[in-house]
Length: 403
Image 1 (cartoon, helix red, strand yellow):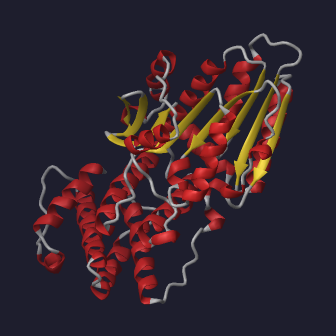
Image 2 (tube, one colour):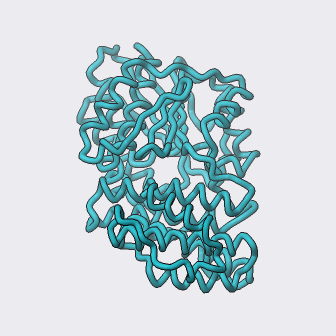
């Protein structure tokens, strides 16, 4: 898909949006008819986005009508991506005209509220398992022989990564006072409770002393250190999935979380983040960066999860759609998703006196072995950046994990 988008970009540069319908037939003998149509569709989307950036809203709407006619939420990866991006552009236009009636959130299909879809992502996408395994392995190696373990998870997602952690420590010799506690900081109480029940059942099966603490917070600035319930002699580890992405737009919340984290003096903090700068102040630059990033995500789903799998639709129409709409259709305080690259994350944690650790040899050795277990694994790319692991799709960086 990246090749399709690059070709569309080249054509977009050569032909202005005003001349779009006079560019002639796209001829590339090395591309299929479907690929050529996808190039033209992506070029049409870029032309519409440029018009939105230039405040030529009526012309943009006319271009988007053509996008809507050709794109589909069940077509090729390009058609599906264009479907959601053109929808977001229309929402932005309607909002600027003062006629928007689209509700942000799309709660009914949001994947973070659907445990089945979360499990499908974990099982189907190679980079999900690489991130989860690396996080678990890194924490395991840093808690060593601790007997009272307290894991604090900023977003528990499917919880499958903790099931793997529980299985690993259940095979180790620990004294009769040993226990594992997981605290989940969540905004979706029902999903987190369901996952907690699953983890409790699994702990019982493993004969593991286990407790699950759910912190339901509508705003992270309300979090207090005492809420985490840190017990005496507990070894604490934090997992922060996409923490910066969701809190950069809320500096008071971010500062509160980091202040608490510093005071606790955890044994290890593992951070996973989106590895892309989707926070440019320039709308058109941000649009292009977001299109290429999500293009890789749509392509990964296409290769990893069957087209008739309901969970794929839930993922795309839930999480992907929500993120695209928030990045493309909103500005100011409403734009909550503000992804930055690992270099920015590294500088941020350094300000709080935190030092980045080397990921273990075992983690880095296992990562490609995990990827190779998947039919689509050949498309998942792994790279080292200083001390962190970058996980991508066909060369496009998607996520970073560091400690």
